[in-house]
Length: 331
Image (cartoon, rainbow, N blue to C red; front, top):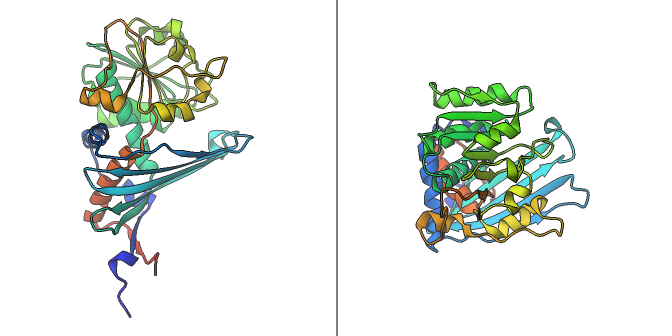
């Protein structure tokens, strides 16, 4: 049999292939931060994502192309979610990442991107909190108990080890125990406080992370927040007033906030301008917090360069472990 040349083979990394990869929270944080710094230095490319959504809103799909200048890797990520008009159990979600080596011109791998995204997003939230939270931050509140809600606190504690009071608000019956279990997996000595009065909890939190799904009844208002509070929007759980009344607005990408953050628009359909984009804050060319009393709103939308960096890290670990299946896709 004729051997298939390397440029005709593609390594496929499945959900189960990636599930067995052991990676620390610190490793994830460092990889994601490095991707932002490379982008801010002008070495990476992260074009605006393409979006397709039917008029009835039952599904949404995205395509994101990017290049990591440090790793010299080009990649495209696709994301498709169906059943947005239904409950969590009836929704379908598929996301993939395909990586190419921009030095050799050969494919690296095609992988399920669900674990990459599930780790990348809370890592970004933790970095936002590290850079934007008021000095001496001690209290964090997470709204939502899905995948992002479960991972938010472990990443926050990793980035802000001085956190003392950890709170969660959620309505899903299986979600609250899952958040507790995830926290104890990484930090066995940390306790979780389940809150029933969201307004009171929001008024005591230095950092609020909203990760809930679109059907959540939670909607923290601006006048609930204490001086100096940082509100990070990942999913849902913050009312538009937290954005429009903020003293300062920081986004991972203003362009992407304008595409995916339309549910936070005011009565005229407008979003406020962004004071700084987060990559510039990390490298010091943009300004984050300017005073301990200002309330900051941070919008966490995914940038494909962070998926590329973390996906490439997973691909390296998987290939080193001999994981995946080679497919003669172009044969």
